[in-house]
Amino acid sequence: GEDVEQSLFLSVREGDSSVINCTYTDSSSTYLYWYKQEPGAGLQLLTYIFSNMDMKQDQRLTVLLNKKDKHLSLRIADTQTGDSAIYFCAEVQNRDDKIIFGKGTRLHILP
Amino acid sequence: EAGVAQSPRYKIIEKRQSVAFWCNPISGHATLYWYQQILGQGPKLLIQFQNNGVVDDSQLPKDRFSAERLKGVDSTLKIQPAKLEDSAVYLCASSLNSARFFGPGTRLTVL
Image: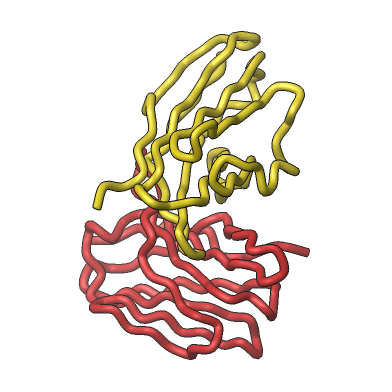
């Protein structure tokens, strides 16, 4: 199938690290993305990783890719209240360049 | 760099009425996409344009939905007549390579 799967909810205390996990299906995916969606807003491209990379770090964000297990994760260090949003994992399928989204993980920040 | 622009941001109509959405992509982006995002789900591709030609409209309900991109820049998406199940956020995105950049979306409510 074409499912990209994510857990639906994650609660994290402010200042802790958040880890959002995703599994995808196409082993030949070229790019994998993380998008952030705040209430009432469109999708903001947070970061992406090429399939030939294992890790990418960008300030508070760390993306880890395990191609063998088709597992992608997004770690947000020092989680802030402004990080509260829905995070979508997405893969670009190599055969047709289609982007397939997961259903999103809602990140809730506890005080 | 200006982002993807969409209008209107919100629209409320009654079933069987018609509605149109407008999108202005990022300057220079040849590829334009329309996505439908139903509450609690990830975006689903409706149609993809490359310049002013349609690349993929396999998921577009063509009996009621239409889209055009006449000059290869702006695009309009129309629904005629609308059904209750069309209530969703309609997202426009554009890309130069593979990274999709999304607009803020139009939230459609069909009563």
